[in-house]
Image (cartoon, rainbow over all chains, first blue to last red; front, top):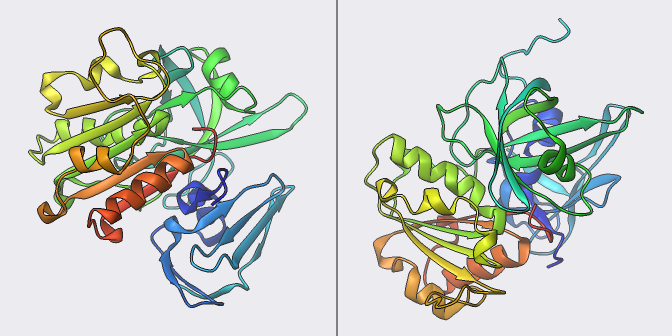
Length: 83
Length: 246
């Protein structure tokens, strides 16, 4: 695991902005391997321009967020479910 | 409705810096006055946003250092290459204004009714949300047994050292100093390892609840160690600050 890896706690504010509610306790299912995890425990990378959220079991990309000029583009294609 | 916080929706609000308390050479605690602050739970964080004269904005998440019911306070450790922490630790003065939104997070949170016994493990400034938990436990008069395993580089880097020693806290604090130790130091002087956890952590049979916070490598190592000692993964709450201890 990369030393710079954060977890879902770090993006609680971003997720609340996108979803309108606290999502750190939401349960995600990986679309690739089916691993179930609370969002707070997912692996989060913030290389600068955006935010990449990965599965801790298979490292698949679950969510991508890119914010520019006050607008956040969201890609949730890697998730089977989020509730 | 510009400037009005809609209840339940996370919005940026203007905070005014109150007291500035230097904790260590690199860490300060800022009390922040936020008119519409809705209150927070122990272990949550807040996002802080700074705007430069040219409009450039930078935001970072900081753990809340104060207990529920107390005014909002954050403790910030300076990162030399940081965009936000050098200002917060070196420049911020009472009366300065910045933007804050929160409280944020529901996972790394302890409520009195959650119980214990509690094992808190901190690497560096990872002690900040754990301090909020300790203050809250003390304020509500909880008798949940608690141990804090706190890893710092040196004694000078220990944040809240005086407060943590207060008998009123009733907290067993076990320090480890990984880089340098004062003369006649009898405590641990290495990174947290399996042997240390075996000696310090409550036995898994006591059904303990663990909160582990700090740099990513610290959190990974301690969490894996606790699971190795029989702690169910679901009873080990983790929060990672990345490589830098932010």
